[in-house]
Length: 297
Image 1 (cartoon, rainbow, N blue to C red):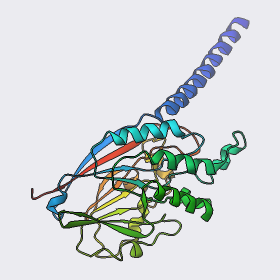
Image 2 (cartoon, rainbow, N blue to C red):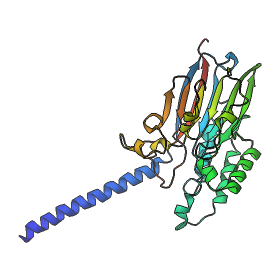
Image 3 (cartoon, rainbow, N blue to C red):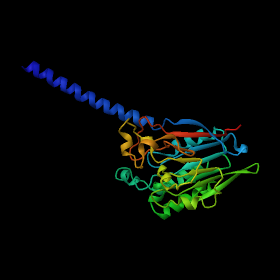
C-alpha cells in the first residue's frame, strides 16, 4: 500500500510540476514575444486618389505605452526600423504613454510617469522624414491636462504635429489629400470639427485612436482610409475568447488588421507596447507600411 500510495503521490506531483512548467513557459514566451516587432506591408487601391499621390507611403505605429515595461532602448529599436523604411508620412495613433495604469506597478517599482513623457518625446524626435503626425489616445489624456499638454508640446517641439480634432492638407504637384485627426473617442473626440475644413469630395485619411470613431460617421460621411489602434490585437490573443474582452463596440470586426468598409478601409494596428502585463501572445507588435495606389494607373 505504501508503494502504491507513493506512486500516486509521484504521479500527482508530476502533473503539478508539469502544469507549473507549462505556465512558466507560456509566460516566458509571452514576455519575449512582446519585443518581436513585425512590419506589415499593405497596398491599397483607390479610384479617387490623386494621380500625383500614386505610390504614396504611410508608416503607422500605435500604442507605444511608454512605461516601466516599454523603455527607451526598445522604442529606439522601433524608431530605427521606421527610419529604414521608405515613407512619405509617419503617423502615430495614440496611447503614446501609459497613463494612470502606471500606478498599478508603482507599489513595487516606484517611478515618475512624467519621465516617460520626456523619454518618449526624446526618442520620437529621432524619427526622420518631413511629415509626422499624431493623435492622442485615452492614456495620453487620462492623467489630466498637465500631462496631456506636456506631451503635445513635446511632440510638436520634436517636429510631430498633433491633430486635435483638426486636419492637415498635404500638397503634391497641385493635388491634395487631407489628413484629419481626433482626440480620443472616450474623452474629447469631435469628428465634425476634425472634418470641418476638409472639402467633402477630397481624398480623406482619418487618424483616431479608437476604431469606435466610426460610430460617429453620419450618412454620407466618406473617409477613404481610417487608421486606428487601441486594441493591441488582443495582446494575448486566444481564438473565440479574446475579442470578448476588447473595450470596443464591435470587437470581432475591429480586433486587428484591415477592414473593408462600405466606403473605404479601416486599419487597426496591433500597437508597439503592452498594457499592465508585459506579455504578447499571437498578437505581435506592429509597424505598418501602407502604399496608396490610384486604381486607374
